[in-house]
Image 1 (cartoon, rainbow, N blue to C red):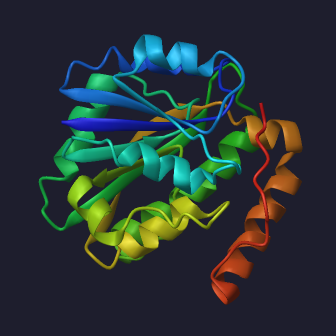
Image 2 (cartoon, one colour):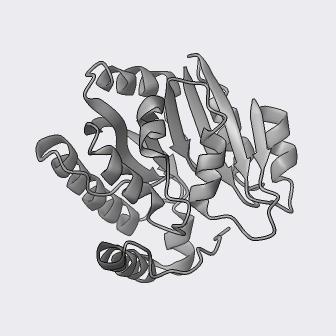
Length: 239
């Protein structure tokens, strides 16, 4: 079984379409929404479509890592698919039939694929940048046996491996997805499925601009390499 885990915070604009798309999957699965304290209709939508909903009720804002972990704690599947509220899978049955085949290799502990922006919103910059990032992951993951980068838009992980490494680092406000894959790499192989892709909105780069988005990623990556924490002190939602 696959457990889809979706962290949310005020995602009423995108969540329903995402949950409706997951409902089209014919394989055994469950959908878990982990909400960070939404004040819009996110929880109402989640209760209508998801199998399990958990809400953060602490006095401080949770990190995205905490949200992902809180949802994963409820996962009953053999695989956890960590995704975002705006992630959608083209031809979802074919997608997971194909990527599950990668896990026939017992050394594979996690997998990802190409990222694309929704066709109606995709720009040339989106296509070039996400292709470059995907190509780097393809070479490093599949050819060199090293994990490069993988966004939280789509990470598929063996549940047993996720539990063994302790999930995401709750203290990270960013880079939690990359850091998890680097630890998972110590247990086995990270597989990049080169014939599959997922769609997402690309909203952060579209609203903040690609130069700022890339600069933030580079600074956080370098800072993390030295200090094992990110330069960003908070990750502001972009809606």
